Image (tube, rainbow, N blue to C red; front, side, top):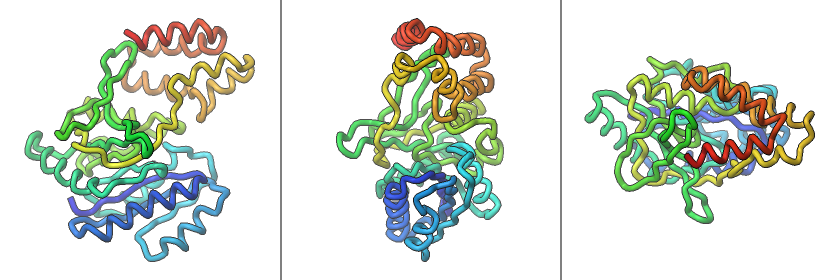
Length: 295
């Protein structure tokens, strides 16, 4: 593993993007055993992201792609990924969120994980980085297992100094080997905004590729997902709830049902019913949801 394409997509949050890229490029210059190119989609930013990044990182291998603001995370990542593949010559692709600051140990951990994967499984796989909150040090994102195939209750695998196998992963800092891409392709284009990372990693796991959680934390990132977000529905009007249910930045029922159809088809009817129960009877939905998550 020597040639890595870092792929990300952004919409505003310029300060976070600058910090994210600064960490990547400073470490690229420090470690000589790998080469890194960055492919970044600017999805309609209004804070001069593209202009400032071009000036700030003019001497760096940064490829900036422009979009109109309707690609969201999944579409922006697809554009960056396709461009990296067209560029060619990469051993793998590192998904990276612009609110994630990679730590210096990431690159060595990726190299060791690739060696471990080839030795243990005879092939490269997906290497999942875990992040922690920069203030509290608490786990925020990484790999996880589904402890129930009906409720999809999950259990995160925290770094423990050894390689661990998982079933699914967040895309904050996750490496996809070229060998996986050759068989699995890239992210499913039907997803709007989020969900594509879970879909891709779970289906790769089902296809027999190892999903390996790196031994130590390799990045910092705040948890920007609400613990229970469904409670917001209680204060919304019916019209607002319907709009939020179908919004790419809301509950996004489209993505939820797509994930069930592709990964857990037996859950599709149940999730469809629960989606509309969420709109018309939010208090009842919330009780059922919390009960299921406790199982």
